[in-house]
Image (cartoon, rainbow, N blue to C red; front, side, top):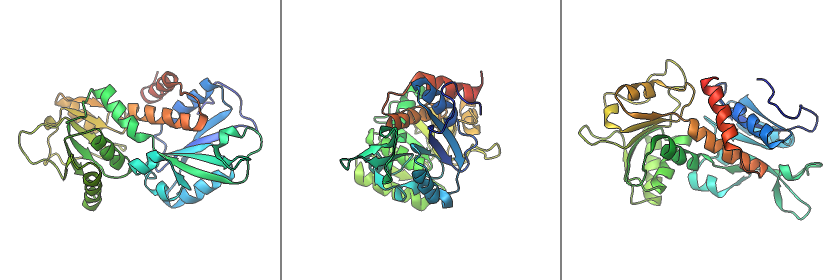
Length: 310
């Protein structure tokens, strides 16, 4: 990766990173490094392939090396809840961590982001987990697909970290009915129980809608199926026809058009990939680390160039 325009690397350069397994598809470094250069910060944003078994020592190593923070992608968002020292209200509310900020105690004993210690960083450092995915997904659904969430009927594929956050956020937005499909049914049932407890007005069903004429407002793919060329569709086409969904959103953004989106477009449905979600969750993470307003349009331009080319 070419070094972005800005200050050259030096011994004072600070670091952020995204962790995932896999990670080579990530467009976050292009987006975040463009933003850091625009803000004039002597920081760099990296990407690391980290197996789930190694997530704990990686977080501990970054704490020792005084990293500014991390983004987390598949499959780390649920695992990280139990690995950070403290959870922000966003992580507690939505049940997953996709952003970590390292903090140190100041002379008065108050925890502050490492950005507030430009010279000497105290030895006592903690990791604090945040979730920036929840607001990002609903903002992207509204902007990119024009979906009205209140009263909507939604089929959600995937009940893992991203899927669980999406389900809870959709329920908080007042969707009328939510269908949960997951490879492990027990996980979908556990998510249904949590939604029913917290948002009792939302009707939740584990499994596909029954065959019939009922149209859904949205099909949302929160699985990783589609990242690889031979993955195939993330849904059972024998149990659900894409013609029954008015709009289809795939959280995957690379490839820019998954097999799911191609199939949905072929039957005339509105489609969008996860670029908008990536943009807005990344912008909020940057603000958590830097304390500055994110240069969203700079980030958007870098993201689109990285994914779609010049």
